[in-house]
Amino acid sequence: MIEVKNIRKSFGDKIVINNVSATMKAGQCNLIIGSSGSGKTVLMKCMVGLFEPDSGEILYNGHSFTEMGVEERTEVRKEIGMLFQGSALFDSQTVEQNVMFPLDMFTKWTQQKKQERVNEVLARVNITDANKKYPAELSGGMKKRVALARAIVLNPKYLFCDEPNSGLDPQTSLVIDKLIQEITKEYNITTVVNTHDMNSVMEIGNYILYMYQGNKEWEGSNKEIIFSKNERLNQFIFASEFLQDAKEMRMLEETGRIPHHRNIGDTPQS
Image: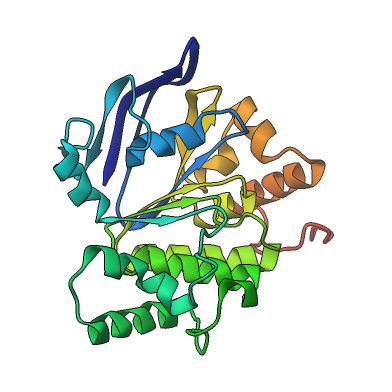
């Protein structure tokens, strides 16, 4: 579990994060959403220690990350996996070399043990027969899978994903979302996802934190978001008429007024 308590962060005179608190639990996908400039990226960077908050506290399983020294923070970071927006694979290294990189950095395992672990996580993200390929030979979806394999190779307790669906087509995005969700539950990871993808919000958002101009505007689950009356949130999530209609249809489904999974264009039964 990660707890964010009254975090405040400014750059010069500009307040970017204003007294934000949130609790992100293990075994669920915790999403941070908001438009550009809302503060969601800065909040995530504060959570992993790339930025120091001006005030407030970040706790990992009850231990104050904010007050830790360098050595203690290093130990926590060993338990953190990162899935970067652009995958951030090393172009000059093969798939297996990319995935093995954290093992080379942080373990003293034998080469055989490292190879076994690499093969294990590549199989978990459904990558086979690609160990010796280079990133330039992979599709965008495969690069994300490899990056996800690298993020979980050390069996982290915490997984941070920065725009994991950036640059992917809708179908591939759903596949990546499902993988993240499955791995989160399977290994009981506290997963934090920074995203603009509304499919991700509706599909895997166990907990959703909506940021607006540095403030926590709303929090809840993907089921609760359907019934939210927060105007800013609704304008952000359900911006188009199509999505507004989809919201209304889902509300009717959830209240049992129409059968589930009826297509939006279908004529209601009398």
